[in-house]
Image 1 (cartoon, rainbow, N blue to C red):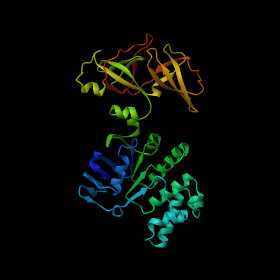
Image 2 (spheres, one colour; image 1 turned 180 degrees about the vertical axis):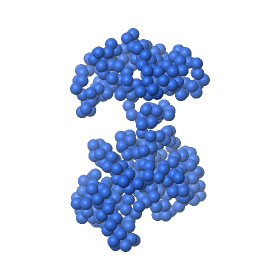
Image 3 (cartoon, rainbow, N blue to C red; image 1 turned 90 degrees about the vertical axis):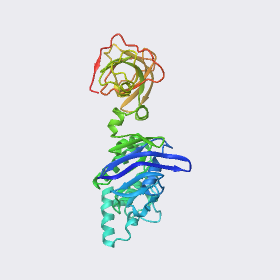
Image 4 (tube, rainbow, N blue to C red; image 1 turned 30 degrees about the horizontal axis):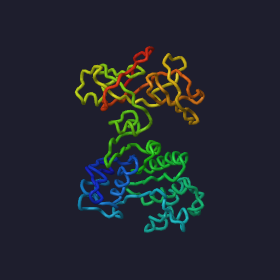
Length: 374
């Protein structure tokens, strides 16, 4: 049975509908994430789950129990849901141990002390138990906030942008640590974030939100390699769309060569089961789909580059004038304006039917068809 289940949930502020017919499932022990830009409705969903906002339609269950429906909202303190806020919201006058124990004060003293000691060890804070929040680093404060949220053993833990105040390096490292802690506790959790790296580092399932709806609920791998629609393809990761034409049920041609795989979904939907050059698509090419190869007869010009330590992210201008991205190991340091050899290394084809008119597809004379498992 899913620990968290939302069925056709909607929520409005006055006449403005913020969440629209949203459904999702989160199984026992899974970590889920709602990912999206500001204003997409993700925090409103979290507030509805916590019981801070009523539903205008739909139904919400936690561990099989209805906690929200139209005309009914179970009080937040009756839901056994933990909440970890963006800033941690620690009590400055309490020690680390005191903060962790705050939500279990009704338990016997021995039980409190045992649970606090367990969580101090779990979060690596044993040596900081008597310190106060102002004596801790940002990462340590978030660990205390997590431990305090876990102390009462909630059915579900909600996290609202928990690492947004931290620097990028600490944010990614802490996301991995928090995931490990949640998995050791076998905790079902839902995080809200706008940061894709954070979402992918923490979550088993990610829902990409857009205008109050979940555009796709899937694994991080599938969101990147098998986006279900053009919005998700454009929102997740980096990449460019290159014009292509469908040659047959299994062949799509772009400027850099032929890609062999399944017929693009949106092409099928348009009734082009027997496609020819008259059926045009846009093909998503990720930076890892274009490999630098000095021996290749196919060349592109380095338009700009971004040094990222282990690699460069090159923006390349193709012979047609179109641009693409390529990840290149950092020992291949090429100058802007230099021509470099490239080749395709595509494992997944992602293509969508064109909506702004057909464009010609130029094929490099030295290109051979490229086969892959789509």
